Amino acid sequence: MNYNKKSILDIDVSGKRVLCRCDFNVPTKAGQITSDKRIVAALPTIEYLLNHGAKLILCSHMGKPKGEWKPELSLKIVAERLSQLLGKEVIMASDVVGEDAMAKAAALKEGEVMLLENVRYMKGETKNDPELSRQFASMAEIFVNDAFGTAHRAHSSTAGVAEYLPAVSGLLVQKEVGIMGKALADPERPFVAILGGAKVSDKLNVINNLLEKVDTLIIGGGMAFTFQAALGHNVGNSLLDESKIDYCKEMMAKAEQRGVKLLLPTDVVVVDHFPSPIDAPVEVMTVSADAIPEDKEGVDIGEKTRAIFAQAVKDAKTVVWNGPMGVFENPTLAKGTIAMAQALADADAVTIVGGGDSAAACEQLGFAQEITHISTGGGASLEFLEGLELPGIACLQDR
Ligand code: ADP
Ligand code: MG
Image (tube, rainbow, N blue to C red; front, side, top):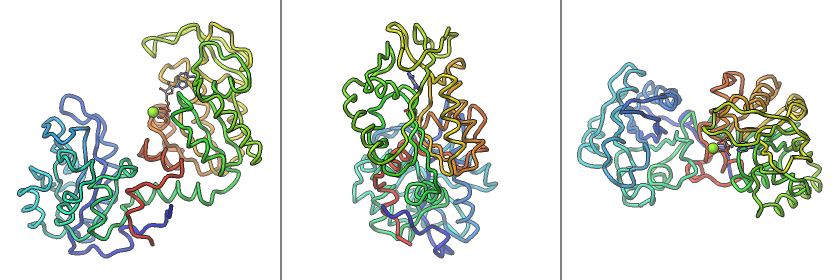
């Protein structure tokens, strides 16, 4: 995939009607926004476009209304919050591509901004319906994609509309693609990737693709146990993707063939019972990774492993991390994940975190400021690391 795409910085937007797809899929509780992080992340693009005289039409999805008009998934609360953040009125349309949206878009003046209703109120959105794409396009002269979180989806407002309008990236998408694209295409070496999380099957293609790029691949979290099993070790009651044992063997052979250092845990923190609720107090002990007792379950990497993994990260120039090292939702079992976050924060390297839970862990644990880039797209960043073409990026004009 070509990562070198035109952005809003490369075109003239003055006096033009610009349709900008954002990711305003914010978490809410009882009708209130609980985190406005995604709205804040979109501000640089919105402010740039307004300051350069665009007539700005914003759109986004929220939740999964599945083509139904669900009032609790209205973007009105986003318009209100955005208006506070921008210090100016955000005109709210009462529909997506209906009469009200069309009339308000036509009446926009330079430097004015409006927001369409939830694009997933339209049945055609997730089907990438050409008719809906054409309706979106009819409102504007330029399409800007700044929604990295949905860039792996071929929907009308993320990709389809680009068939009918000149399309460029917003600043957020440009940053995501720039940093992750460089890491995959032309990384400063040593390049170290850390993969964790629950299951091997979630990240099969990521493991396979990264083995073609990195100098060292670190595997922790629940997925490490299938690799341990592939080495012939007993993993007790730990998470095991039995059907993926052969795949893990293949990946170990591939690493050896390509001269990639594959690091697995040497010691493991184990419990008798998985905590329930997940943050309940637990008693733990540490055992050697090749001797997990039959009745124990591995839930975090041990202290020796933390030191080995951290050292590999400290020697790196590029680090990509996806997936926690243990059940970090429990404070007792978060030590491995904290050690990795700390190692990334300390490293003199370009450090990139992708994956919803890993990003949340970095933020909760207070390391976000010291990491080069935390991706705003969980699923999208995974597909990026898999080396897949993302429709919402592929549709943009090449530079
Ligand atoms: P991300 O969202 O960053 O891609 P995943 O969704 O793949 O990460 O995995 C996160 C989940 O993996 C967390 O809920 C965590 O508790 C779980 N996990 C990590 N290590 C283990 C383990 N050893 N046993 C069970 N679950 C684990
Ligand atoms: Mg996750």
